[in-house]
Structure formats: structure tokens, C-alpha cells
Length: 172
View 1 (cartoon, rainbow, N blue to C red):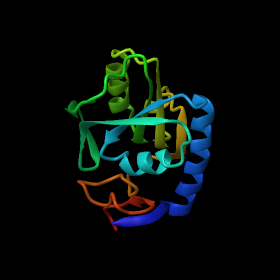
View 2: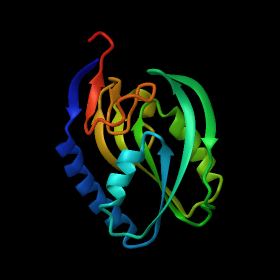
View 3: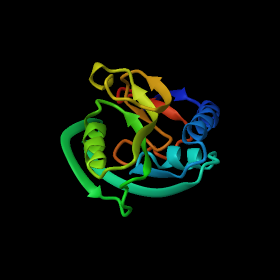
């Protein structure tokens, strides 16, 4: 069901090196509270954080919006943060910005907790009209509308462990 590799392991690694330099320059050594959205962001988040020179604290939250290959439209916080983010520089890690519905809801939720700053790091952003207004501060790659798996992205909890990002095609 894997159609083709979209982003190789080496392409991802090279882009993460660049993103780490961008993030370090933006935060200029100030402490970052990295917030990973479970489960998809874990590979991206850990590989990128290992490259940073800035001090980093870490927390996670988990939301549920997908079933199979499509969004349910429902937004449910499954696991909330254990850290108070008020007055902190929060960098939210997302695997893929798709329609943007989940991310918009998360940004509203986190902004209501009054962080000093709230920025987004995303491995992927799909080139879709629905998400063009979502400002991704640190973006790995822009991709098309295809459904992708690998490097943390899943289909019903499968394929996360692939070291690359691939297009999933149910007709294959």
C-alpha cells in the first residue's frame, strides 16, 4: 500500500539540521518549552530537539481527531499538559498540518493559558486552501494533498516506524 517514498531519511535529516539552526537563532539561547502533539510528532520532535543548542523543557499533549484516513471533525483532548505554560516560550510540534482544524483548536486552547510566545514547528504542511492562514514558524516541507505515512505518521497506528515519509495508496 506504500505508493512511493516522498521524503527520504537523508532529506529529512538535512532539513532538521537547518530547522535547528533557525530555531536556535530565533530563541537566541532562551529556554524553549517544546510541546509535542502525541503521537505523530514524536519522531520529528526528538530528532529535532537533539540538534538544538538552546535549553529545552519538554511536555506532551494528545488529541484525537482522525479515524483511518479522514478527520472526524471532533476534537478531544486525550492527554493534557502537565506543565503550566504561562509566561513561557512554547514551541508546539506537529507532524502534519492538514486541514488545520486540530491545530486551530490547539492554538486557541494554548493561547488561553497565556504563554509569552506560541510558535509552531511542523514537519509537513499540506498545500491546501483550508490551512493557508495557519502560520507555521518552522516548517520542514510543503507537500501535496496525498495521505502520507512514516516518520511518526500513521494509518490506524501502523507505519509510524518507517524512517522516511511515503505516500499511502489503498489501490496498491
